[in-house]
Image 1 (cartoon, rainbow, N blue to C red):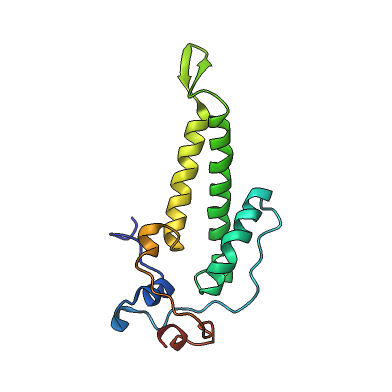
Image 2: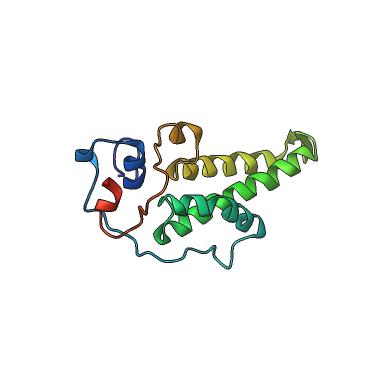
Length: 152
């Protein structure tokens, strides 16, 4: 059985949101600082999304080398959503099935991709409700080593 309640907010987002310092985990494992690149096996659409969103998240310390695979899932889900939306827009909402009219199967693909994207987008602070609470300092190197980098 999983943990109860909503998923824990990442430490970096807690700091950006301005949470109380006694609620911030200052012993959280710190991923090594290294360049983060989109995986070779990613689709072209996901690579485009990565290039658009990734640098800003990496600069703010939200996207690290440990998060690259989860972020790629987000990019692939958004790409799948785009493709399914294009199919839906190019055809009818109802299509002919074996026993008459049925809902366009692309609608289900679109809905699943949307759910996946929104789940991962919230984890990276990409939805309006998550973003509105973030307070970002401009300038300074927040990626310097040690947990103090988050609280300074």
